[in-house]
Image (cartoon, rainbow, N blue to C red; front, side, top):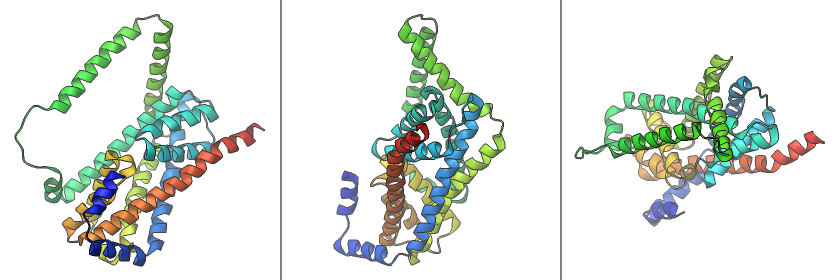
Length: 306
């Protein structure tokens, strides 16, 4: 909430009035189309998950998969990355898929998503190298890469820890061994899939829907209607990175997207309005469908049990 307050506090009354006008005059049919693409991406994500669970011997009901995915998005708005835990927990409860195996498949599919994100970032840099370089990087004195050092230390500690528990016979350690084994099984399920091409198709489809969600909203405001392809990709990438900084881009998404669009001679107020319209629509969709899924998951499965 502080980030939202801070970003709005810097606006003049005339700026706020301009943004209000943009909200009032926006064409929300394009926003509705954006939400439709968002729904398709969620359905595709839930369906793609089945390709990873089948090699482990599990065939969950599609409705449970969809609602678990939507609940995960809802939880991520509250606690970053906790949605993955909630998703695996829901499937463990209602489909009796061991948590560690379900969570392992989620980790594995996240790897595929990271590859797609990196590909889009690469595409953005290919088309807009100078703009993005000036946006992301600043010249500074070179020093030791502390991030790399920290990762190496964590990796070394993890390797030592694994070797210790591997040779232990304590009951608690045995449970940890079982959890790690199930997690590894879930992760490597991506290599055992019989429908690899279907998995790849849905992965590309999911991210295509994400880009289309962003793209069609540009038609809702006259100032952003004629943005070039490069601006769409850059705005999408910057907005996606802002999502990683806060819960669902809370407070950061509109500011980040606006700062990217102003690189293309879009006035700051319409750019901010676009960012707020985009973020508000996505957040309301998650709150609505995630909340309904949270309520209906136990009801749906109770009726099946009856």
